[in-house]
Image (tube, rainbow over all chains, first blue to last red):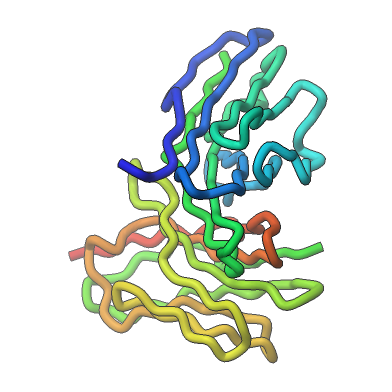
Length: 115
Length: 111
């Protein structure tokens, strides 16, 4: 399977715990995006990488959130001291530089539940 | 800032009915426009796209035309099937930037 993969698919945690999600983009894609989707809403942008450089962060990305893409391949999204309001689906997408139309391909998402 | 507004759902239709889901946008430049679909239990999939005014995107019998004068990108299908039941998202992006999504429209097709 050469699509975008995310791990884990589901995560249940207690308030105050730290969680980390992983995203593996399509291998030839150098752009990687993180979005968050809450129930009944469209995805909202969190952050974006081109290769290993984090080029944009949303105001939604509080100090408790950090994302990395150390070698320009996979990316991790960490949430520290989770809160119930962090419960959502976290989506990863990737695209290629040569795709002027910015066609982004999405992974299946990681569903986070904070108890 | 850029934004997308979709018609409110849910939308329920009978099989073989004509479908229209309205989408309008606000953008500072010349965005690319997209329709994504999310089937039950699955991830977001790109349904169709258009990159400039008057372009028509099409896929799986769905169509949408980029209308700059009305800032719209309405999704249409002439004859829907039960398998089209899903949530549909209109989105835009400018250059290599983030996608900005509408709130989604849940479509249910009854046999």
